[in-house]
Length: 271
Ligand code: KIV
Image 1: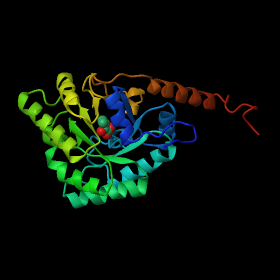
Image 2: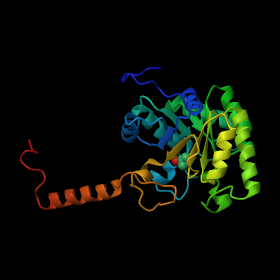
Image 3: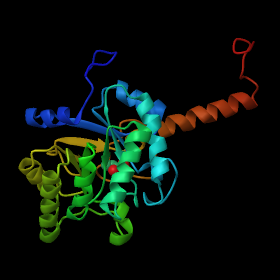
Image 4: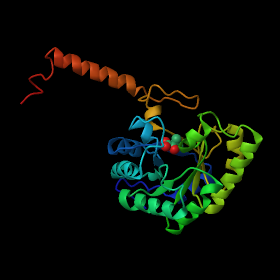
């Protein structure tokens, strides 16, 4: 599908074609109109309306408190700013774990009320029934394995997952189950690079890594982390591409000083 700028809209099929062609998939989070518009215009393939909005936007300790209504609101804002990218919306904690009917109802609300193009949910074989039911409504589903932040209170730590054989075998089994269920892609979060390489090679659907090494079919980062807005989070996998935190600090301090010194506004800035 072509859009005003002449570029083609990214679809789930585009991502599968990119994997087949060996082209890397780029994905970043966004939670609002203004930043989503910039990220989309810069040419990103996929925008994830992540439930990391719970941490980044709301200042919560985990992703657990964010609600379906919050996610729909963030997704609506993002969709309004996007022309080209595929918009994936995280299903929040509690909106799909109960049973597959609840999962379907939540996914339908996300699609209908936000205008997003697909949903993402965390987990392996235990969520396969929900994934299959969501897919019956024609809603594309992205999976998420490895570190699954919605289960943080079960695991108690954000360390690398699937380092041992048992956990690695479980991840491989889960990834294959998600592919068989019909997921169009899977996020691998914080797992050994070797394991991510092996599973990426074995799957026909794309894998998108965050802390999962170079051999995933694509990469994702949280926008506010890579822009240097969140300064207190520095995991090894994070590369900072800007220091907006410092720029914002400098700009706000300059404004405060100009107002206090009575040098803002000038005559030219007045009517
Ligand atoms: O919510 C989020 O930002 C995510 C990414 C870390 C993949 O799920």
